[in-house]
Image (cartoon, rainbow, N blue to C red; front, top):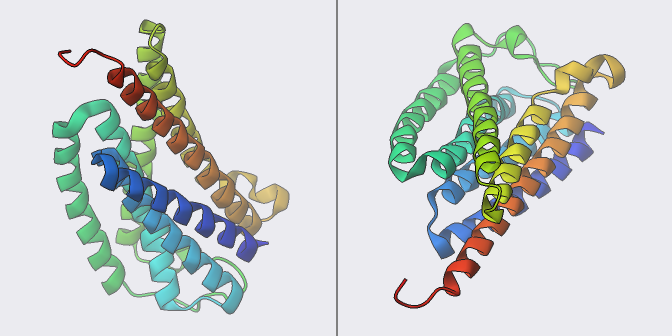
Length: 238
């Protein structure tokens, strides 16, 4: 089940990254570039999960899985929300800090030792095999990124309540809510491990969470299309 769910997550995130890449190259909206990077990272992390679950974990596979899945993908996904709600100037500033953070994360994961013997049949747990710094980076990146996504969903909802007459605001609120919900689902594997087992819970939450985030992307894309259509109906001198 873990390997199958990893394949589903890899396929969905790859389709997602391809779609956002096409839209970015067509419209040059920076939040879609941030989403493309985030989903490419997620797709690679899902491939690492598949390889580790099907053929056994080794240090290289686990480093890639932890770096791309636990540390980097949520912050880059959150950068898209910053661009959507905060504008290009704020987003560009946050992006500079995120690039610096990503460089530190890459260097840390390449240089940090892997302690003990990695299990072949279960997903390794960070506290059992990694030093403190990689785990701090994972907590900071995923925690702060998830916070940004949740706050973004709340802000979008409040804006929609004040501007209910604008249909695009409803789409923006729904898009950010779905992205935040998907991120929470991605993080919730440990909450249900007692019911169906740790690895199965993690894999199922990974596949379903990325699908919810994907739905949020299409909702935001519909908002953009609606806005573009509305502008096209305005007189030429507007």
